Length: 420
Image 1 (cartoon, rainbow, N blue to C red):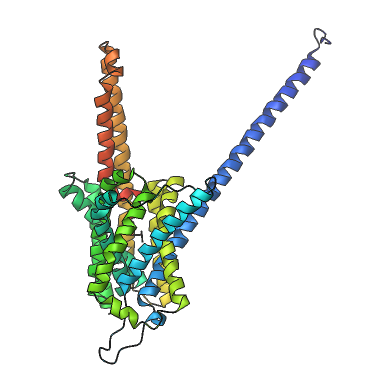
Image 2 (cartoon, rainbow, N blue to C red):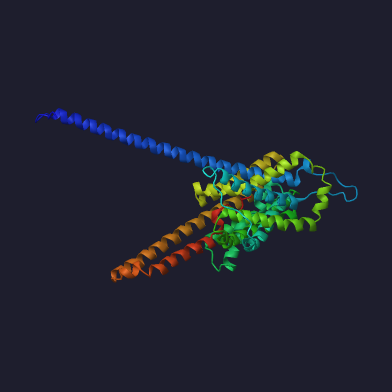
């Protein structure tokens, strides 16, 4: 190896320039990789959020069309003079499609295990009985949702079902024995004021459906009950959401059959003129597919963003859905009507933010208290005790706080007034 002569600073300078050049190149390469990674992540988030908006809004409009679309209404009977409609059957069929999709995905996961992953699903009577209480509430929730959508317009649909957050706070107090902060209660009061103003403006415009509002309030209550029971029932299916979806929809299909017979929808269907229409069954199947897809896309949006961002996305989606409904129906709404929507959506968004901040604060306080307890034990020379048996109650305390937070914030994992 040729040695560089002493005092020759030009060689050292060349070597330093080469090293610096290599270092700069490495930095630029890392920056490019990070930028590409951020670009891919941002693109993925944008695609998932867009898919959530498209699926959710499309499902609302499609269900509205199936439930009260002019083209799908049968002719008036000469004797009764009433429209022949079957909302329970439509909901039943959507649940049936969900069950079939679960079975299809399980089959595809066995044929293409490297491409599709889906948990094993088989009918276990014991698990089905354990899930039954949730299924009863689930049937009530989706039935009241569809009945509300049947009797009110899509533009008022968000306001009509806006009391879910309020019911969450009430049940959190009476069932879970937990109080709610003043800020959160103020947000609920804003939501209630928006709901009352919205009902008043619908009445002033002559478009108020009292039965539709009652169904909307009932849907809000059942959405809240569904969240509470879901937390309790999930361990029965190994905390697997897809297995719960399978059992829930199977039970729902069975529960809907006597309801369809009791309310006379079986005879209504036999006289329905579009019963053999491929368009009708195609739209029915598509609505069932969207009902199944919304569960997946909701979970995916929470996964790639966060529960808070998901709620914000749901609120923004509800705004867009309301505007689209007004534009498509060519309605002219008053300033107070728009204010009612703003109060409902703004109050819901503010409540989500307040609860999110409170949960973060509680989590930090729990971690700080745990660290202080460990430091205190360490100062007393009880290191073995901290690392040994006493860690069990410490971890148990932390888990209880976490569980309590989850129970007290059932509405944080999804949009409350916006979810369909």
